[in-house]
Length: 384
Image (cartoon, rainbow, N blue to C red; front, side, top):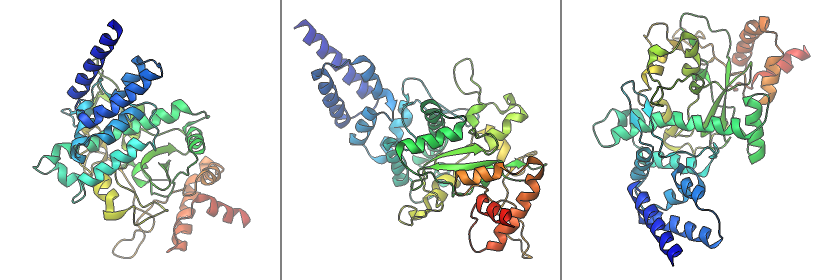
């Protein structure tokens, strides 16, 4: 009897805590049902109950979907549980009570559901327009944009922690093979190949890979030379209080490239090469990801036109000026995947700029056909 009474007291305390954290009765019913099953099987409870505070875990996702809250309320719930606040430098800082589940894969059901909620709530205007507005959605739009960076960090950690390879690219390939889906290489990566305005653009340094080929939701930027991820999270520092140091003055010039060219989780659906008009309805990628609210000051000072020596993104190779002359200097080297990477690495460093210039001409000569990737061009040159 004492044991039963103690268990009921524990259950009551847990229920009260979950309600304090924003869960409604429908979500609590899911928790109670899962709790009862676990007790009946004699499984330990301590570590399992903690998964309710891991956003994206199996338990959290079931509770999140079952909650009888509006899409807007659900989005707000996640940010409240994370104690998300925008600091004076425009960076989103989060707490420690709730966190993203480190075992949540970049294609996880929670991410797909969360993404749909964003599309449902912000479907009439761009996320930037919502953030600049005066209604109740303004703060939510700004925080959701900044929250993308934390989703990126979790995705990177998942791939690096759970898969084996000589570099991040090999681990990413192992991840896709394990879950048996294809990766997308078809979306342009010019905004992840920025260069200092004061320096010449020679050729792309990075490629963009999205998960999965059909959804193009989670995004990874990979350095062509090393196969390592290019991400803002490789340079961020922490304050004594455990928060991200968001002061631009605390970062050296050599750390700027990773911040300027970092990855970005997609709430909308980029067209890519496997364009599906049913999925890409309402130009969701343009509205939610491209026309986004303000970045943190740390990135804004690097990528805003007019800033001292900002990081410039080149125009696509097919762009012309008013006189009909080609002015765009950017063409993705990687469009098909690993075969393009292998072909590009065969080009000696001393010849890469010259070969890339010829590759641009090749792509323009093929117009209106699309850029086929570097491997096809390379094979055509090898045959001559």
